[in-house]
Length: 292
Image (cartoon, rainbow, N blue to C red):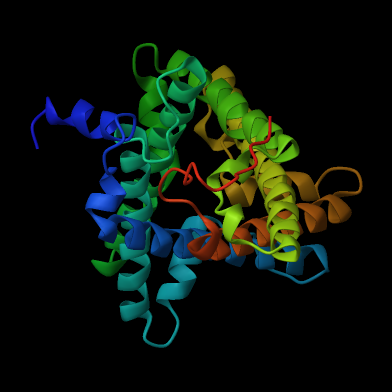
């Protein structure tokens, strides 16, 4: 594919021609498998955190930890291969959504921001994909502290990390909460194919799960800003660290239980998005509610 063909693909939807998912339906099938695996790497940490909130001993599980846990199950290597395919598929889906715009986000300022968010998602899940590949190669998962330490030692590294942390707070934290409370994620679901009770359940599950995930993302972003301010990569928090931070707050066990239920809800929501998610624009002949 040449560089000049990318705008043509991206504009195919606007001109009324078949979009990239219609031309290559395997992309839609891969995306749906990616939604399932994305759900699993939130569902497992959510269940682990709920056990901690209920008094069980152990450590909070991150997404990478969830991948490692699946690799230790019976038939762990085949499971890990399947999980790696799903993670790679979801990373690819982020690129497709950003470049080819099958969901018709458009070229407005808001649409560009959403599509940049898809790029960020693709990068994040590409990281999980490579973590799965390292496990398949018999290596341990790479610690984020190593590259953070190198970044903080680089010229302007602390500024870059601080800006990234602020963007994470705004783009991955606050924006997710706003999207959940405003119901804007509804436009990405095939609600016209749902019955009334299924639609209510999908919107409730999405609101609860996305909002609580946004809260966790905000905590992670705050830890990145703290690491940049103090020049200390140890201050960074992944998903596990964010959950433990909640546990150490007043009413920490209640907070941890609430957030863990949110992560479980998001995991289930993502798995069900294999059925619910839209991989192309809504059919204009079918009424489709768009929340503001």
